[in-house]
Image (tube, rainbow, N blue to C red; front, side, top):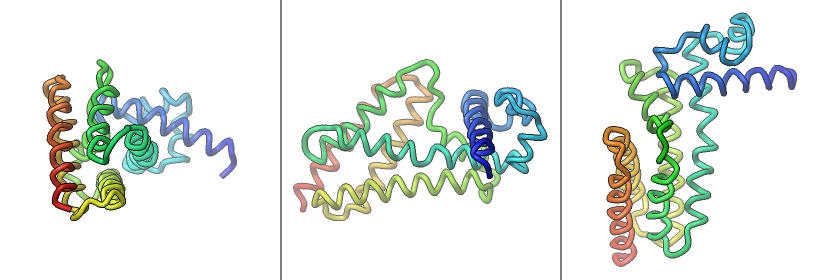
Length: 193
């Protein structure tokens, strides 16, 4: 595919991501995506043979940037590994404190498509969540935390739970509370090691 074709594809993915995130997958037509991207439907279908393929591409496009954001937050936070984990929650809270925030795009996509577990976007979203958990496990293990796998899973549950409850109540106290719990879990694990 030519560089121009790559740019057009990226332009479509960006437009679709904004629409799907803002309005929901089922509420957005391919016509709306084409209009938002500034392309014809023929061009849209040249790059994506179906809406399902486009939805999966939007999830895949957010995978690495989202992981890199959490990696940066972890690295930038000073202190112990427990402080760094707590920093993930603190920085998440700061980043979502905006009226435009509609929750975790991965979780929302999986929830909207829950009746189609074989959907490529559901699989891509689940794979992202597993990659995040594996990254967190690697970080914990690298900091000498015993049973890093179980702790990473607990932290993912806290993080995704806090994200969901924040969306429901629009109250950052939930992410703060989850962050304090995460800090305690990591400190407890450090002492046990």
